[in-house]
Image (cartoon, rainbow, N blue to C red; front, top):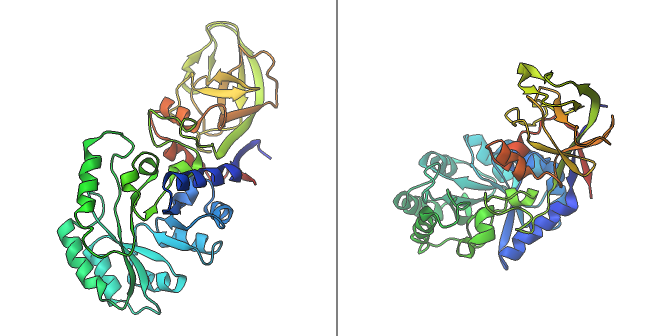
Length: 358
C-alpha cells in the first residue's frame, strides 16, 4: 500500500465541538459537516459527534443523504436550501431543516405537497451579498410563510462576511441589519460562524454554527488554533520512499528550479498535488521528520515531492513525514501557500485513505 494516510483524531474533534459550546453557553450548535466534513469524512464525523451535537449543517440534499444514514434523528440543516420542487418532498420525508433564501425557493415551498411541515430558516442578506433576502423582502416572505401549512418553525439565518477580521466595520453593520428584523416572530435565530463563535458573543443568538474550528484550524490570520484552544483533527503523513545525494549545482524536480548550493541529501516523499498537497507550495515550506522541520525542495509533483535532508543526517528510507498536523499546522502551511486551511483540508483527495482514531 502506498505510504500516505490522513489520520483523523475523533477525540480532538469532540474537544473542539465542546469548546464551541463553552464559548456560547446555553446555545445550541449545528456542527457544520459540509464538503465531506471539510475533507475529514462526513459520515464518520457525524457518527463521532452523534451523542454531542445538537444538529448538523450541510450545503445540499446530496450531502444530507450521507449524514442522515448515520444520524437518523439528528436535526440536519440544508444551508443552501432546496433547488428543485421534489427536494422539498425529500426534505420533509427526511425531517430536514431548510434555508429559504429567495422568492423562487419560497414559491416552491408554498406550492409543495408535503407529508409534514418543515422547519424553515429565512436567510437575510445582512451584508455578504451572496444569498438572502433584503430586510424588506424578508418581512414580506415572513408574512406569507408564517401561516403556511408547510411551515413548522420559522427561523432566521444570516452569515458574516468579515467576522475573521476583528474590528472590521462590516461586522457591526451586519449585526445592526440582523437586529433590524428581530421584531418579527422567529422560533430560532442563528448568525455565528466559527470566527463569531470565538470572538463575538453578541452574534451567538439561539444557535451557533461552528465549522472550521471543529477541525482544529483557526479562522483568524493573527490567532493560532493553539492560542484558541483548538486541537488539530487531521494529520497527513507520508514516508521517505527514496534518498539520494546531490553535488553542488545539481537540481531537483520539474523545471530544475531547486539547485543544490552545497553537497546535499534529498528525500522523496509519497505525497503530491493529486493527493491534495498544494502544488503552489514554495521551496522552503516546512515538513517534519523525526520531530525536526525540513524544507520542501523544488516543485511539488502529482504523486511526490522532495525535501532537503542535508541538516537531518539521521533520516532514512521509510521515515514518516508529516505534511501537516501537529508539528506543521494546517494554518502554517496555508499561509506559506497564500491560501487558507479550509481549502487545503477540503482538497485532500479520495485516494488518500482516512484512518480514524477514537
